[in-house]
Image (cartoon, rainbow, N blue to C red):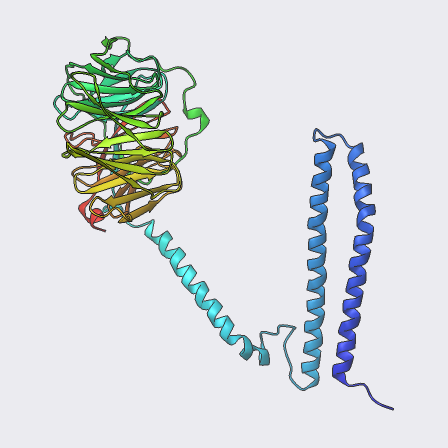
Length: 492
């Protein structure tokens, strides 16, 4: 009579186990409908504010999760049985194991290579994570220090834009959705002058000599002359802090009441010159080098170049497929860069009076919110695609540096002296990078200082010792910062 071998008996045993497993799954599936029907009946009898259809969908999802866990549990039991069977077979052949761990004994040699690789990965990951933790406890002597110097509060709505005068006296200008533009004393935070000539939201304010240009949602750009007298500066409290504070504001930290604007501030109601050629919101403006011409950008997909003295339209810069978002002029050359929602920015060249060339650059995948010149031959562009790119004017085929962020980037600015890019974000952050794309600092955002809403714009001031960076946002305030970037940190 033939004797059944051990291997065939084990195979037949595993086949019977798989059959019993399939039968148990069939029983589970067969009773699932009865169970779900019973549970639905129970749900109908219970009081709940959720609709019955939603409760039924939730019940189906939970049932699917339960089935997955049941299958995993059954597979785990089968694996345990197979391990016990293999241990019994190995024990019958004369090899003894402690417990049911196959990683010990003879099977340890087979898994040694993969185990060593896994342990090496764990060591590398652990080393990297611990180094990050340890680095956070190091001394912050080489870190950037940001000091909130002063807050400029007085607008009744969000502040779209701010700028600093290019000549003496050095004052801060803000343009707000409350239809006003204001001039502020940088040292005292006092409002020096208020412009009330716009019928729509004031979108931008720029300065040239004693003239100011402001763009508005009323489809016009206004040129108005200002004369201010600076008050006596007040001492500033030292509230310096490293630039990496990041404590979110709570809803209770922000005042719900209206902010009363300065009542004793003198005002101007009539513009010296009104530019009216646009058919849409004038979103930006800037002075061409020399201060005799101004360029404006509008939602009508065009940028216009005007003669300030005659108010005549000199050139209409057309070609963008969608609304313009910003325009900027070169500080020393007759160059203009315009950005648009069509994901491009264009470089317009007016250096040759007989030839007005234009170059189109496609480096972003979403709205280009701003593009600005630097003192050198560079252009820096920011976009809603959460990137900022640095371009060389001599070779604009590809960016020389790309900065990737976690939020959309609004109107950026570049420091002339320090060559630092300030990035205002939708998520209330303001980050600082160098021209090579290396992150230098992040401005504080805590319950004591920082912006509480989207940061719309940033502007550097090279001629002031107390405040060298200004930011504004939809929390209806502008903030003056003193940024101290150590030379060692900038070289990294």
